[in-house]
Length: 116
Image (cartoon, rainbow, N blue to C red; front, side, top):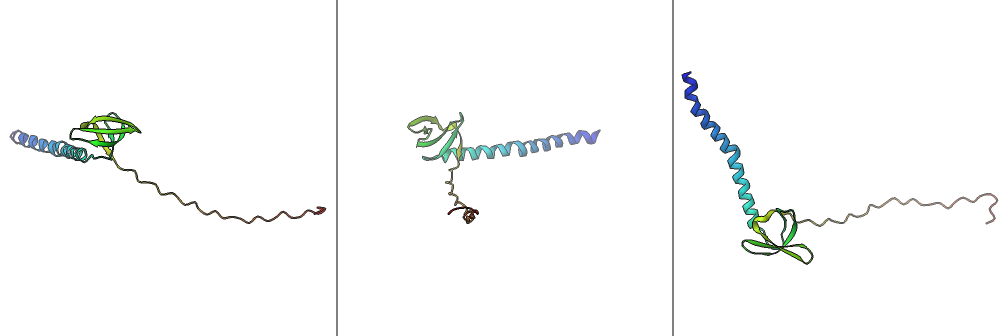
């Protein structure tokens, strides 16, 4: 029993270390990435708001953004209301139509008794 009693504090220390390593540190990294993303929002960026609106930033201040959510419709949004910055859409290259094999059409054979 003496051995078990002396290993209890060590077990708690190891358990606390695992908690910090598996829970706290990844959460801090996520928060840092989110802060950097919000600070990088600039005019012309397309963003998704917490409410689900998608719009393009037309004006940016320290604590507030103005988003154009439809042509001629601009709304004010607190910076912390931005859920994510969307990647710019790359224009799709038009696909060249594949050349189809064109079969030569033979004229119909003359039928016997055809006056022509």
